[in-house]
Amino acid sequence: MPSPFLEIVELDNGKVALRRSDEEGEPLLVIEFSVDAKDYLQGNYIEVAKAMISAGMQAAGQIMDEEEDEHIPEDRVLH
Image 1 (cartoon, rainbow, N blue to C red):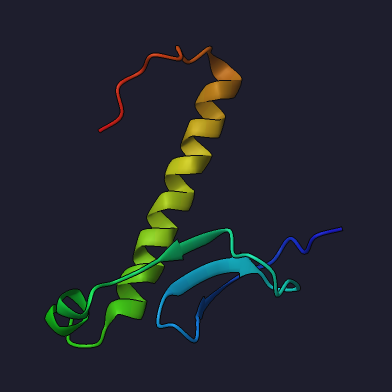
Image 2 (image 1 turned 90 degrees about the vertical axis):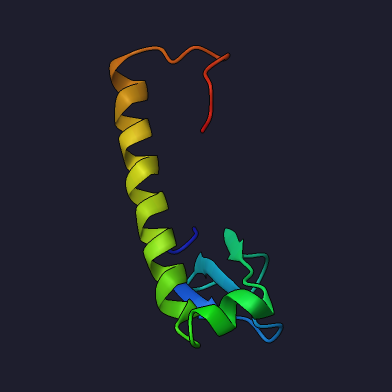
């Protein structure tokens, strides 16, 4: 049974990944910052990745709650 705990890690290739804490396989999510973005963020890209993942998980939770309450059409517009 997969672990319910998730961790944010920096991979050897410099990408930031979200994975289950007990797995070494493919991550659930990978975020890649360009060299220019890393420079612009003055090396604080890990903190930005954490904020991005947190916001994404909150949005996913809201979507899951909405799906329980109502049917979402297949042709919805994504922004």
